[in-house]
Image 1 (cartoon, rainbow, N blue to C red):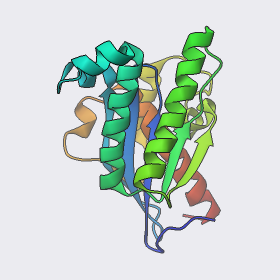
Image 2 (cartoon, helix red, strand yellow):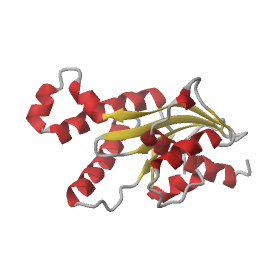
Image 3 (tube, rainbow, N blue to C red):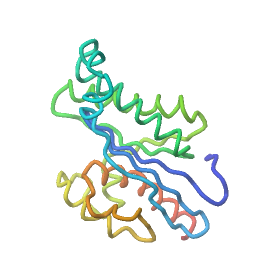
Image 4 (cartoon, rainbow, N blue to C red):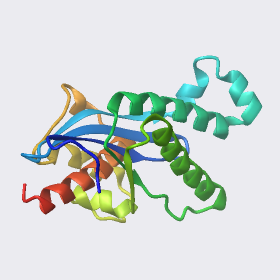
Length: 192
């Protein structure tokens, strides 16, 4: 059961990564199925660590943990602004090494905690990596990030902020795909 208004659903899509994270926020009109992308971009952990007196954090906790803290702070800001009814997070995959796997698992948990602390009534859905890609019409096991980027402008019944389509990063496209998977499912269930 979802706790959203009858008219509009606020949705966030997250593509967690070990050093950067794709974030997207959109508003779905429940009557027409129209999706308005409000914002979507890639949060780069290294850029955040290198700014705003984060050197102490880096030295105290190590680079990986410092990135996680900084991304968590940025996500909390975004969630406070977006106030999502639902957040779709791409599940972590079986990485090539255990350290990466563990970091992806920790990133996913960090996203959930950031959401819980800022928007405790938001519903969270974790989906397999292929589901978001399939919503774009891209093969689920495709490693070609450019296919995802190229698919963004072709999304049906969707509007984007001015100038957004000029430069879409791969992590951003993946975050939009997570959100779009929910939208496609909602449109199908409600014949929109």
